[in-house]
Image (cartoon, rainbow, N blue to C red):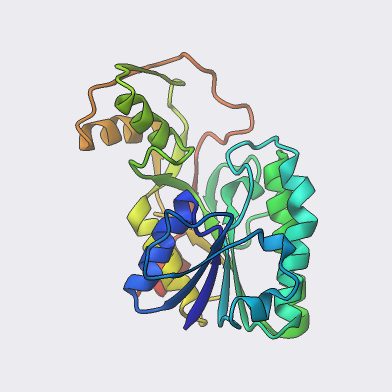
Length: 275
């Protein structure tokens, strides 16, 4: 299969492109720059939204995996709503040109404040511009795909654990702090429980999802179980032999973060052949 991956140079894109290539897929990697993309991919640096005929420009891919998103960790950035029409028109143009399968990266933030296990039927009530924009893109992409009989997957991401300093997660920030020689890291009390999934497992799950077309719709890319943030971060520090300690209580919890939330992993386990 030929898979077009947008946002391929980003933290998630790099690992997902590699996972697709390792599975023998042909990958067209698009981003503003592509210096961090696996050399086996066909690199196409560009401004995605300026491409006039993207379906043909990118070689008529079998699948679009749309990861591109600006300011993903700045939940109140204006970019989320400013860019929403651009994402819509790009995906719409691809579908109208003949694309047969669309997969888009979602986020647990599109659900809003919720406690418990999240699945494809969980109501969405986002409370940030980021979550609102992601929900809107999910809904309109679903409408477009239904109109044109295109296979649609919404890959809802959770809390990804990786030791790259280039990401924006707490784990990346701790790694960067260690490399900068810091011995203390300001932290919340860390009592909220989230669904954590290791970076490589996440990338492999996304790759496995998009190269099949039997499990469709909303797919939780999740471990399926909650864990206290403090426990997972302490374990991360130990796993990587970092000489740094958490300064508990330096920051308050964000008011819109759920106390305990995790993804229902039944669909992704089916994709991976675990059930």
